[in-house]
Length: 463
Ligand SMILES: Nc1ncnc2c1ncn2[C@@H]1O[C@H](COP(=O)(O)OP(=O)(O)OP(=O)(O)O)[C@@H](O)[C@H]1O
Image (tube, rainbow, N blue to C red; front, side, top):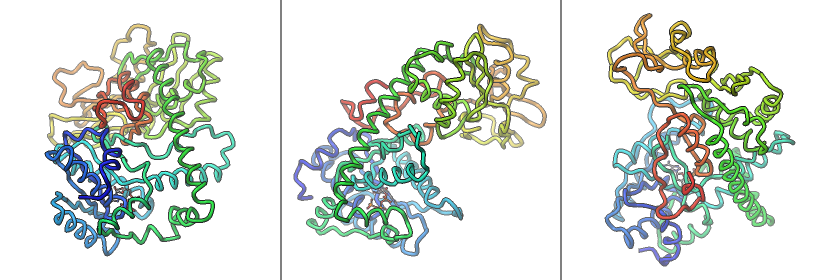
């Protein structure tokens, strides 16, 4: 038993729904080790039947990584905690290694969770990590001299919960807890941890910042950064709520791959929310994982007021006419890829195949085929054709086997739209616009919140 008293672990975990168990992501560092033991303490007292699985990812990047994972496995065995190590095997990229390692880590953690029917992963990110993240982002913004950068989304820092791949929640219950307090607690309990040498390697930005935060003004800078994160998170949620309301009121999807915005959208008074909605919708139609550029969307929004226009941004054609503002995928760079089950096609369509025979290709419907479809009420025929031409179809040789427009009997593949900018990582700050866009384009609804009873982030209740 940990001598932390009931208060700390209850404060940290009482909001969570652990009925389907939890994965604790443990690197072996102090924070995740503390997370694991606090969580075990909480579950032992409140829900002893709940499954707890500790998972360590061996990135196979340092010579000691396998031994460190084994040490974690031994520690877990000593305390009766189920543990798995998963290795990031295969080639590693020569550039962008941290991002690739992060991507692999979350993929493997999600696989480990799902293999056990668990939909909740907890990580050991602390208040110190949060402050460091915000300070690094602030420094980057300053460096980029973005004087008119009004996009403070990143300054919200890490979210208390993030939906991974629209299926598994990653929650960070220690975001309000200091690293020093966790280390104290571990020391009191005689539980050791591993010091990752990269955490003190001054070639990296985060360790340099950590050292500077240990200076005399460190605590004041920490407090400012945490306050900034809280304020930016609240603003981001609020803006998301207003953008979701605009999308709900003024956007429709008359055909797959086509969004129509009412002309009133261009004249709505809440410019900020309209620009934010545009950024989200353009990324969704374009199949892009990041929001459309803010300054360019702002300029586009201004131009929408002056009448008809046709522009391309974020791989999306914005075709503003008297009858509405139409958004569809531009015809360029549409992929033609060998047909595999569960492919994410063009960043915007999840494909499930029932016909697995070889030689099949997923490629756009294309103009000559799409031209046959009949126009639907209120949508200019040319716009409808262009949107449908960019939808995926199954091809063998030169022959099309399926068509998203729906004129093929018993299609051999199912096509599910995804909300591209939020498909991989959806921060709980963005739940409302994500839910609004999912509803608009027919994507699957969001899975239930990892928090029970009430709405910790202020967003689920309304999402
Ligand atoms: N190799 C890993 N295996 C499992 N989980 C990991 C791994 N690396 C990081 N994590 C998770 O992500 C969180 C943040 O990672 P980060 O790299 O900041 O921490 P760390 O320095 O590796 O360790 P810690 O946070 O435990 O002190 C960790 O607390 C842990 O929950």
